Length: 491
Image (cartoon, rainbow, N blue to C red; front, side):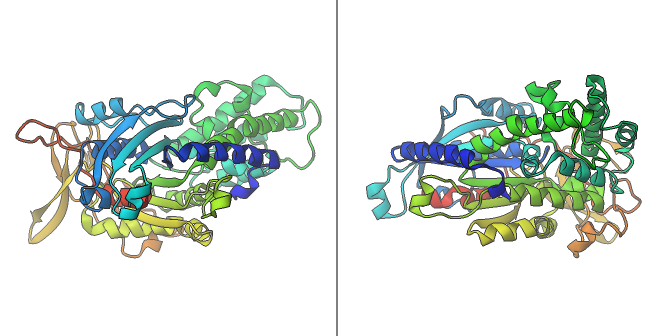
């Protein structure tokens, strides 16, 4: 898909940008790591935990450079892109460590440079390498990635697909008001600003309703309708799909206005994001909150599978030669990570990983075909629970122990945000196809027989040493993620 998103002019600009970056990298080696995922997948927490553990020498037994003692130090430096907002690491860590509160979600793109000084394991490399690597971490919303396929679609294509998705059983009731308004409007009638605004607001309200916990849907382009930022109220965001587009738009019609604004959205919002950020990445991690979709039922899981396939299809995966790498970056490693593994007992982690493998299967196959290394892992960048067992009659149940966030409910009990509680989360199904079967029973959190019991926990209270030094943030398999994403550059 990615090859169809740019013109010859775009490719020329990308080549010049890449060549300039490569020249700088000869004297200061760097690696650009993209971090994305749909909202509440844990992007901010992942970056904060990654940096905190490297700076503070966290427990990372599967991260070989750290395990072998070859990392001298890791520290933050000024980022290379002055026009990109800085990832506010210090604020996020203060929220996690001091307030035991999860930091605010990603709302726009941001960047942070982490520099690692290390000793190579190879004597030959020590002769020619500076032993210094800068990792430029680029944080951006996954919803923006879902806009990239729009670059290859006309307004008529976009409208037809949006209408078809809106009538799916899992969306039909949420989209009813917008579809009713759209059905009353003649696309060939005169353009009218208030009509365009009413349609756009109704369409955006439908997309936002799809994001609520009860549905947990994922495929919701245009992404800026959910995160408008400084574009809110602009003509580029005041459009909506139209029904019954069977002819070319009449000049001056509502159809012509909506088509023009749709094209402006692609030109001024979507294309610059792809050209200036996605095409500059070397490595990528895609974070997925499969737990929320599992609670919402098979319809949400099928929608998440569609979203993950589209997201992975937007990258430029593969390996190039020395010559081609001078002019074009390729993402040679992609990690697909199921987050919040600490909300399940470790006995279910393999099943969670298998579910995410199934989610990404088709897109992963395409990425592997181009030579990119792709891996899947179930992880928790910050572990908010610990494990234990409880007796229930003659049965011993595996439980997770933590402090649920205030207001969380399970079995009629509402938690106060202060009390530590042991919860039996349930088991994920052995046959993972069942969670994608939209024709089968809809296992929801509020059903009489839920598959899992999912509540959100507060961040953990950090341990301190005898000297009063705060230890690094606990995690599940963050070290494995680090080894896959940057370990080879520190060999």
